[in-house]
Length: 175
Image (cartoon, rainbow, N blue to C red; front, side, top):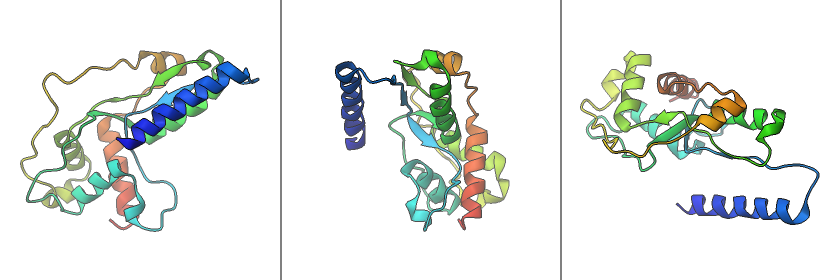
């Protein structure tokens, strides 16, 4: 949670700077929740991947076979490619200036991730936990991603596509 606090302070500093200095550019803030997605950049080791993808890696390596996948505290996700697109579109769409955009594709749970792996990579079935608990609370908070979708024209990837592509990329890296 320290990272969230630092991000909050950084965003506040950016808004304060724009208000005080009146630069010749405007500011758009892209706020994503948990970010999943394929690894497309060079990494020296699989241990260098982000925490969200690390849980997927450990699942396909069989580390949760006899237990359950780690519970989430976020329950909201977005594909890294959609976050990247949001950054590009925020530069291209003048109306995005001065806005805070919540870039989120939907809810996720450990079970939904495991199910997506099973559907997209059935050959990994023997490595996945058999009875994953769906830890998505029945009364989970809702979200509104309308501004990002309408203003930036983003059609978010599905969890199945995102997790499938993530697993494929991890396999290519030697998982």
